[in-house]
Length: 124
Image (cartoon, rainbow, N blue to C red; front, side, top):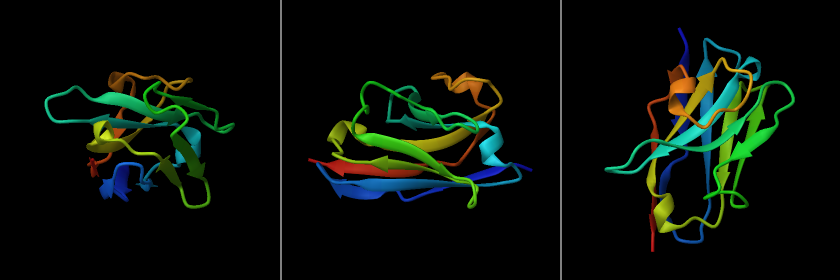
């Protein structure tokens, strides 16, 4: 059974940083596309960042480009989202997910396993 568990969320002031982690069991993450999504109250779930299999090329939403970085640690079977220069509009529940597709896709429907989410709140 595949399980994804996010951690690292919390409350931070605008301009601060957080690092989210996503640990996997039942699936070797390096063999799959991995993505980070977020969902704010009353809004649809949106793509934040993704990392490809093996060569670990990355893709970012325009809203986080230059501020967020996605990476993976194959030894720990985990992926990470480093979030810098956080803004109040980054407040959301953040989810990690994995996909069997060949490319990093920005649509939630392309991902078949999801974590439970971790809350990130950025105060102004």
